[in-house]
Length: 165
Image (cartoon, rainbow, N blue to C red):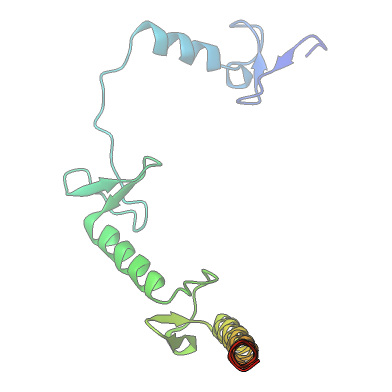
């Protein structure tokens, strides 16, 4: 073997003309490509297998996902049930999936413990804010009441001064 011989990156054999090297060591990738391009083989029926269970579903009801994988009807239905269970056990706030016993009812939602605490804190802050707003409103009404009383007293004094002077 000389230093000018080249090894095929696909099959690992020597690229050489027929007779230059032993037939078992010679690359035949180019010969196979030429034969494939020259006379296309008759289309063979492709065996379709389920992506999940690897069952032969060539002549059965099947689905094809967006990646081109085939699913048998049973595996597709099982996948839909699993997705439904996952959606039922997913916290609507953080989006993580929990065991059903780890979710806490809050209103019409089922949330995780951390999100439940966050919701309670938000409600507490709203109540405190509403309490401050109510106290501010009471304070303002108290000032308005005193201003009305002072206005009535001043009107009474002005009327008294007008008529009795």
